[in-house]
Length: 294
Image 1 (cartoon, rainbow, N blue to C red):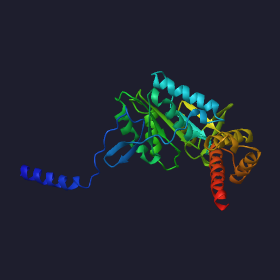
Image 2: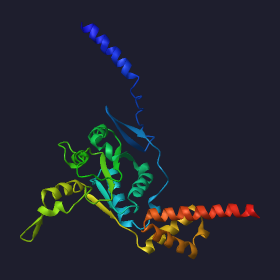
Image 3: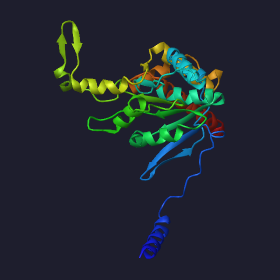
Image 4: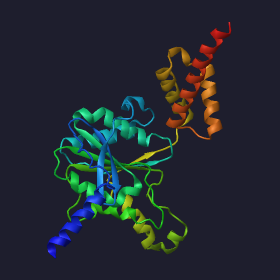
């Protein structure tokens, strides 16, 4: 009976095997510097990816304080010194994601390895962290555009890994996250209804404390804010000259850059890059078309 049952189970597994995805090739961290974590019902695996671009920290203008703080924190981590998990929060298009990409390009030769985790895969974050615990490399696990809704429990996995589990995060893993929300979770007027004044101290209610407790686990907070016009134009000039040439930046270009930001309703590093691509691309296109008409 046992032999027959074993044979039936073996045949069943053979049939199931055809439906399972192929086993992934382990990431060679001596070659690859970045990977994406992909969750599946049986756990998850890492898929190596090449760096998206050659963006450097010198390309990011107007955020000098944030660059220096994150660079120092990451270098300390790579050298085995105390370092903090980092939360990069602020307005959209202000350089939060770009600084992570530039950081990898700048520090990969110093040993930095980057793993990106989608917000929807955070429930498997503890599994990923345990896989990294005994590896010789040093990893920044990165979650971009992180935010949670009020009924979303995925943040509990993140909170546990950052500073809540008995074992704590591995010594070779740091978590970096970007978000438009300072506390990652939505805040409402109702949350503040239980806030009270005790003497001269403000005591938050349980709802607010729960929301603050997640972001509070990140030891390094870096705020990113909209550019003023002078900084915006400086970034526009950098990118116009970078993807075009010195001759492409002049008073007419500056006026168009201001108009571009006005139509978009804000000034940011992203808007500056988009303007440069729009302006240089259109100018080169007209330069190609005009000779053919002669």
